[in-house]
Length: 141
Image (cartoon, rainbow, N blue to C red; front, side, top):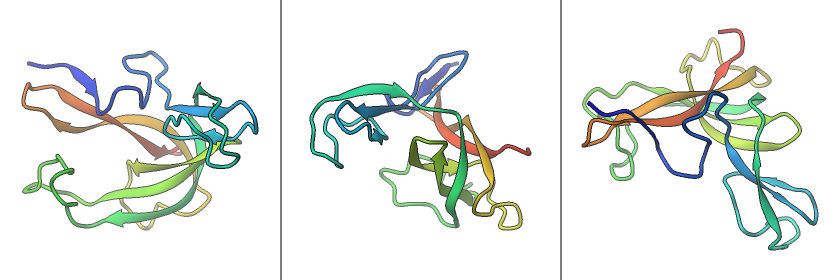
């Protein structure tokens, strides 16, 4: 049986007791970017450094993905697909992150909802590894 592996190396710290998303900070204008980028889209500087991002934020906007995305790149179980939440979370004082949400309930999700970083299985790979991805969950849950 496999273990847990990140969906992509360098996207977040894994394994870790305190996993974080990894972004970049422009050393010239101080813009925060996610995911890691070698150049700054704000000032065009190529002087960026990796930066671990915060774990709390506010739901900026959201929707519910009601059907399986195209495969590839979607690697989930299409036959047992369940709708999931998708949104942008504005990590406090840093950057907006496009993310999976742990909730797909229109009665729970609302713009401005306080969210926290978590990690969920995306799918199981051919070697039996649980492929982990990041997501945000409502703080109240």
